[in-house]
Image 1 (cartoon, rainbow, N blue to C red):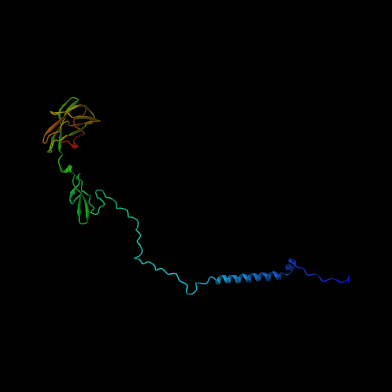
Image 2: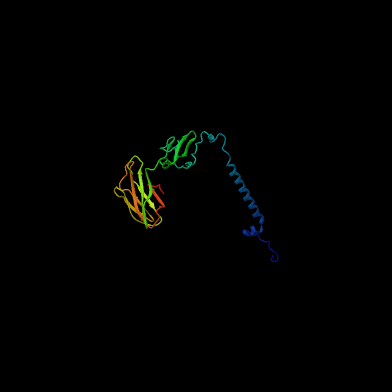
Length: 232
């Protein structure tokens, strides 16, 4: 009996699984089949709604008349032109057809096509100056002279006046008004201004005299109320 060999004993457990790989493959196939059936069952459960189930109503699209209008961006106001307002009439509040502006330099005239801005002569060109002046040399002597600006009030009311004289250098000795209260003398550079101390009645006259030395008797500028004197 000792010489007889025993039959090999079959192994159990993990060693048997390792020695038989077809068992692992079969188990994997079985798991895949089970997962496939589970996936098919879940897909069939997502079937469309059964017959007779209420279907949600479909709302009609709004027509063009029902769509509310959205206000667009506010347009910028038109550029304002000098002398004209943005009103519908296109005329300034104080302007009327054929009216003149206070300065007399421009007027607005309404036509069928809209307002028309026209130019008109200034009042200085249309009306004579209220105070007129005329320059002359009263007396000349060695080293100087006495000059005069004779003025006349041509308006219908009493007027004040201002004389402005400018020479090429020289020295002003004095200035005075003949026969009436004296005014105010102000010197500047090569000249001076004299403002009246009393108004001149309508149609009246007054003379401003002055003593100058070391200069020409012809002034570079002579004005009465801004209007050029005559006589030189």
